[in-house]
Amino acid sequence: MHWVIIWAALLWIMPIRVGAEPLVVSPAEKEIMLTGYTRGDATVTLASEVPGRVIRVNYSEGETIKDKPFCEIDTTFIDFQIQGTRQKISGIEAAIAQNESRVAYLKKEYERIDQLHQGDRATGVKRDSAQEEYQQAGLARRSLAAEKGALEVALRELMERKRRHDIRAPAGWVLVARMVEPGEMVAPNIPLGRATDFQKLVIPLSVSGEELSAIQALDEPFGATVDGVPATARINRINPEFDEKTRKLGIELILVDHGGPRRGGLRFTLPVALETQGVWVPRAAVIDRYENPRVRAKGAEAPVNILILGESNGHYIVADHPDLQVGTELAAP
Image 1 (cartoon, rainbow, N blue to C red):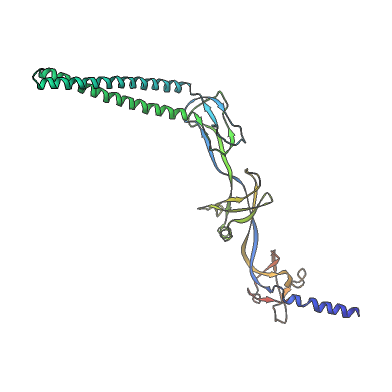
Image 2 (tube, helix red, strand yellow):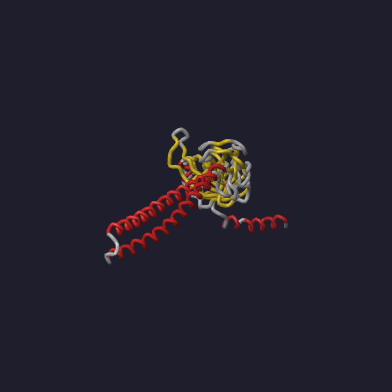
């Protein structure tokens, strides 16, 4: 009775294999892990364009740049220059107003004498003298306007130089190096700090042409891990220059979705599949896989011996065999 029940159970289970996924020889692929480390998308060196004494440094290493400048240089002397230039402009404006009044007066005086001259009640010499005074006043007005324009240009230049006494970094970036303290004298073009953009994290990698093709074949954004946490990334840029020493290309990936910390040095891992020598054989089709591994093609009478080269994704990578062409369906052991 027990044997009948067991036999019935086997008959019930066996048809399940019929509908299972067929055991087929397929092109061999091996999965490798490309590993790199995150860094900020861009870094700028902070330096002064003007000499002077630093009166204030507003950020320390690791702090995020906000509205305030990174550091401020004393503006006392340029403030004096700005004040002096503004006073000169004010003086020129007063002179222009005075000249405008004189031009208006001389114009009326010339017109009056000209009318008298037309009525033979004033000499031509007097009329010419009035005309000359009127013209000279007009020329003086043009000269004052030009002088005022030059002073306004000088004032704009001074204001721009004063603006450059505040050394700024892009808002949202992080100060990663501080090389100046309040009270120090600084010179132009001397590095005073560095700021990095960690709002975007990138991963530089050095890959072979085959590895690059495998990455480009992935649907973007592709899955990866950052310090063991799932993330997504995409290709940011590819350097077409070939490194003859390493025989590799330099590429840069950028994280698209990452919920972890925003800093450099996070371990990034990307699995990619590369074609390799041999073929893929499902593990379920291998007979006596450890001692004398063999597989049997569906419909064939005898199995064939195989040489296992490795394992990948539930398959064995086996050496090429004339009876194991890609697409050959294998029988279950």
